[in-house]
Amino acid sequence: MKLLRVGPTGQERPAALDAQGRLVDLSGLVAEIDGDFLAGDGIGVARAALAAGKLPLVADPSPRIGAPIARPGKIVCVGLNYSDHAAETGAQPPAEPILFMKAPNTMVGPDDQVLIPRGSVKTDWEVELAAVIGRTARYLEDDAAALACVAGYAVSNDLSEREFQLERGGQWDKGKSCETFNPLGPWLVTADEVPDPQQLGLRLSVNGTRRQDGTTKTMIFGVAELVRYVSQFMVLEPGDVINTGTPAGVALGQPDPKPYLRPGDVIEVEIDGLGAQRQTVGQAA
Image 1 (cartoon, one colour):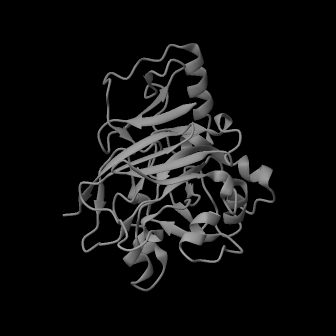
Image 2 (spheres, one colour):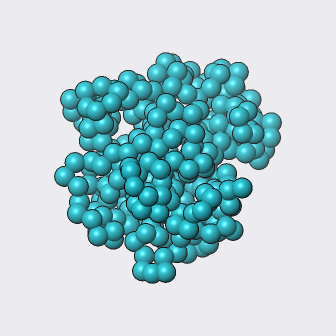
Image 3 (cartoon, one colour):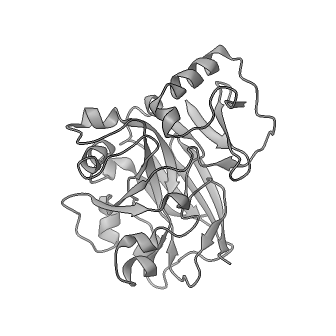
């Protein structure tokens, strides 16, 4: 099932795609697509209503698409989790997952404008598979238990400001948490429709030039291991998001002069079966 939220910023309504690919309104059934929806019977209720074929269509035929879940409690990110990305940045593959946090209010819709921060000259792109948590996860023991906690998957663009991240001291968070730095969606695709999250192609283009073209099978740590591992250090709650890392092709890994993002650039992002994003780059006021 493909779940999404549509409408103006701050006024999104829950929706889904039916078997014909039409956008149907779930707001008469559920209040929001959030942690409570994922942890309760929201997915089951929505699936049954879709199967019955009696849901109304969304009135606006071309609405703005928001992030497919309401603001999460936390966004956990994984660094250097693709072997080719570690190589392009000159880093040794990590022995354990590298974790950092991203501010929850970085999350925007998949086609919303991305803003280059004030003073930034090194804003970078990163196509990533996002795993969305559907049940509380703490001290998970194995991969099966970990995957049972995943409600679904989405396309994420884990934007980064490399100077803030690497040259300004402190942790990576300050280069990862600028406003608009986590477009998510268009859909939350439920886990039953993604039988193997380690067999997905990921692609990203800037101004029509392909920059990233990878596959989740080259992850150093797979989705199940990441969820299990993170649960040893923090409690994951329904609605939380894990950005699972990016393949090679980021601006940071390119020869000088590196092609960092500039106002007017257009970013196109897609993952097999999870949909596509398109962002125009602007400048923060």
